[in-house]
Length: 346
Image 1 (cartoon, rainbow, N blue to C red):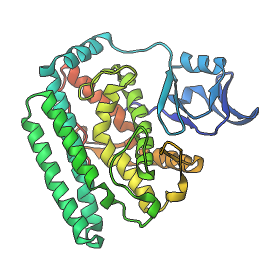
Image 2: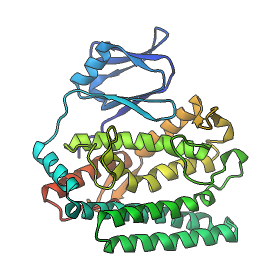
Image 3: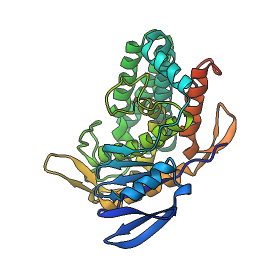
Image 4: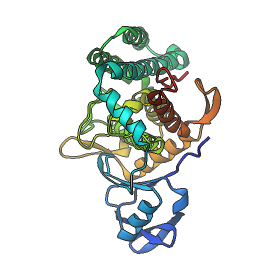
């Protein structure tokens, strides 16, 4: 099993990355705060006002360590990387299938089924663990959502073209987020949720979801590049300049059980509350610096948890799953697997 590449998150505003030999040093106001051997880093994510010296960027490029710049809200800004590696034959096959709807549809079908089934699993887990404490209206709404998500997954199995599958993917999202507020079990006026909003997120729950989705997409993009796939060329998500479409494709099966449940756990355990957010004049809601650090710590801790992969029938860490799923997709594109097997959470 390939070792999972570590990611360094730099959240301190005003921090600067510099080079010292084969080490990446983080300094704040000229004072060294931490140092990391470059050989142990697979990527660096800088959030907000974080700078890097040319020598630090050179060190990262030499060792294949990507540096990704995000805003404080987690919106992607830029990515600095060295020479791109990858199998040209694998990428050619990826491009060919992405451009051919008949070849694209089976992969999109797997992605949509994976998303709907994992959304259903989140709803089922909530009913199993907390159904008795819920009111009848919430319980009924979740049971109906469970039935509708099952129906979406069944219809996706029969859908013949990509546009129909994209429509089902959108339907699954509307059903799932239509009942998402019932998964929030704490009473906090500052944590209301009326629906999914982004660019910008308009409430604390959406701000948390968007931030974790950004971290997840970063990991999936790195996984695609590691196995030789082009993260910009997807199947479910249409190509768009600057968009990591393939990473977003793979994120669909991860979001419900990993990202959404992480946010729900932080809220329901009161590790996030209304005072951990601030609202800008344009209505955008942001995590505070301390809350953002807490989310990143929880995200990294969750990646260390172990589970059994249903396809490989091996125990692995959650942090390795992006790499495993990217490898399975690459094997399918090479012809080693008849279909791409999405990860189903139980």
